[in-house]
Amino acid sequence: MKDAFGAPQSLLVLGGTSDIGLATARRLIARRTRTVHLAGRLSPELDAAAEQLRALGAEVHVVGFDALDPGTHEEVLGKVFAEGDVDMVLLAFGVLGDQARDEREPLAAVHVAQVNYIGAISASLVCATALVRQGHGSLVVMSSVAGERARRANFVYGSSKAGLDAFAQGLGDAVYEDGVHVMVVRPGFVRTKMTAGLPEAPFATTPAAVAAAIESGLRRGAHTVWAPAPLRPLMSLLRHVPRAIFRQLTL
Image 1 (tube, rainbow, N blue to C red):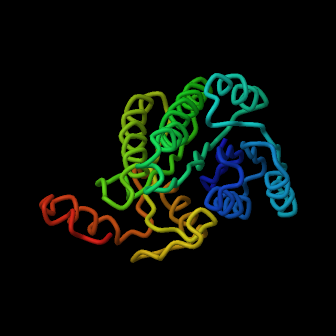
Image 2 (cartoon, rainbow, N blue to C red):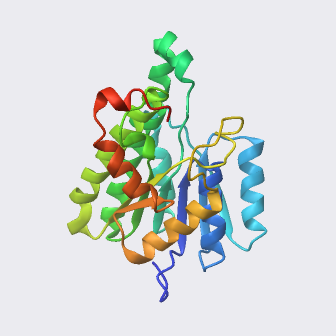
């Protein structure tokens, strides 16, 4: 359960090596989170991430989890919830893909969709069902401003995030009466290992800043968080730009 200050005591990170996921875990550990489950493909990198969090004083468990294998999600994640209540689930896995390659190779585009959308839907439903069963908890879903409107430069990735965003909003409405909170996070360009080597976009931010926005959103009970906040009015404007003009923009 959350403590008297509203901080989650237990956290499950889906995408255990995610820069944003780990930044959020570090921030929450500093604010009384004591148990962390890092779920991801078993690797030295995942083990190293777990050790870093243990050094901060948390009890950390490594969970073998593969977004591309939905058939195992119920069993794998069910074992986590069987160990005790989980106050917060952070769905932080995803792939950026390569737009040029994804257009040339349909299977590469399918891979992006399978990870970002299909795998995320499966994991979200499994976790949401478990949260409903325990009667409380938050599911935080990492979406993206790229999902707000498909852009020529990354419409494969953007479309996968658009689907996930819409799904998460609907899921939030479905479990609201059951005491479960779903929060969608829409970051812009974040300086992470996933975006290394790419030219920065306006309003570029950091994993630590996104983690702070996540924590703030949780405390407010927000349903949607933009990181950074100025992206909200900007994307509202871009949604209404005529398509003939929008396709000419170098965004």
